[in-house]
Length: 183
Image (cartoon, rainbow, N blue to C red; front, side, top):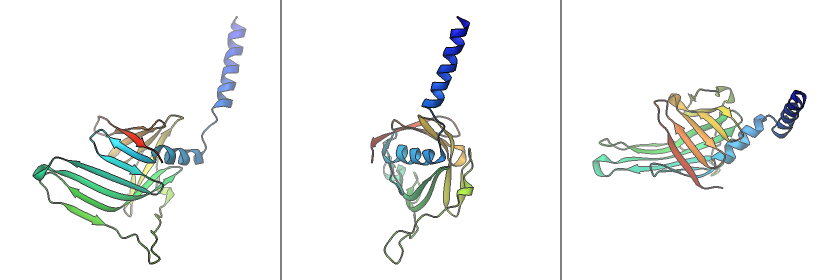
């Protein structure tokens, strides 16, 4: 009986190794792009939209003096080590504060968008780097079901293959978002 149990375990381990090969780096980039792209509805009612090359955020709460409003557009690129993003337009108004506006011109003379250039050596697992206005969110962990990205200030985000994402602030708690449209 012991011999049969040991043989079964060896066969099972062999089948697992054949069925689930290790992820290549290209798989990480492809999965991150595929699992991230789409329109996301966050639990606070705001929206985030990820395309192949852009990221948009639409958030508003409160009204009048207590309004909290944020609209932003960024260029993004997916990489085997994570995702980079560079904001090109932002409108921000915090409760009781004055609105602020930022805009970076990325239109080239030939009427195309200047591509987002970045330094892949700045990705560090478990860490976020910012250089020249580019944010480097690094892949900290990747499985068949989720990718864990580390963002700035110790925040992390777990992006699942099924269209659910959980934002994990460094200070604790979690915020869910759901992909409501995929493209």
